[in-house]
Length: 507
Image (cartoon, rainbow, N blue to C red; front, side):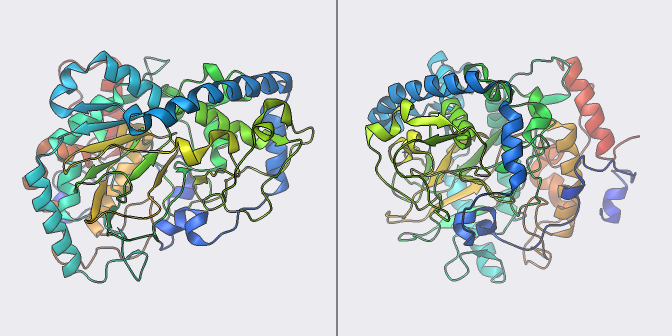
């Protein structure tokens, strides 16, 4: 709850609860390993019978079309994968921050096709390096900070350090988020959403040291796992309906209105996201490149999405299948052309309870064994070498991973900062996040506990205006949005008015 100082600027009022009751309570304590089966020691296994029934319902009446679409998809993958392998990191589009107002068409077309981008020079390099030293001092001053792994910390359960708050509210980063989110569109122009008013979403940070091999997070997708198939998850917005109907080519990953109804956290997973994040992203605080503890992405994008969604409906006629307990992140094998051939794969006559790589309460994981046609051993490409102050963003459907081993000679440090639009549900999330910030407890989507409540050097709410200014405070839900500003669309005005009410600025 707000401190008395904030009651003078933000009226107290009853706040409408989030749509999903499961996201109300603080989550159990945990760290990043709890978000993924491969890091937390859970074995992948068939799900309960209800998931077999679910799979049957999803494609009922469209079985023939789904089978034909699968064959078309495999053909497209066979054609495109060699290009990805040939280009490697060059397939990822890059743009200078100074060019955002006049983005080249080549960048825009590549970004929409690949779903990932590097924005160079978002924050001045020297400023970032100074902030990194301040961040390390904050960690040294607070040795009680939780991190993963406990014996050699790499990913820290920190959300409210001065450095993180300044980075999230930096005007250049907010401009970058507006630019990136402008590539989304809404089929309904009246959708209560504004990509031009990003909210500040508090996430963790990583300081990966040379030689680390413990934070070896394999190919995965955030934003839930079983939720992508569930009628009460992504099904609430019919996000993937064209895929279930055998028309994967009609799937538009940039359509935003269908995502507003989504529940991506049906099982209150630690680290599962209940806010609408259009992009995952991080701000680099180091100079790092391939094999130096950095990020890998799968630029097949919507084709890869269609594949991992359809994979649970098909089985090979001949050849090895994933044995019970095979780990998505660690299992590897080689596949002969005959095994991968479309005529070796059949639509299951009776749906099985397998959803390869999905575990309730954890992120979606992928592997060469479970998702053979994606050839993730080759199609996961490193992001290009980055410098301090560069920002890397990837679409919320994108498969991504981290280097298995940090083979570089210096730390690979990033601040995780996703790009989130203003929506009604995101405004509700801001209310909870704002209260957690004032209390010093972890951000709502993450593991609970005392967090930074007693941390030395933590910024308090009364100091935020001086540190972040109006724009940064609005993004944090600490200051009223200007819904009367010139140039707003009707939908944006409605969105900001509703957000202001939810945030308690007026009835």
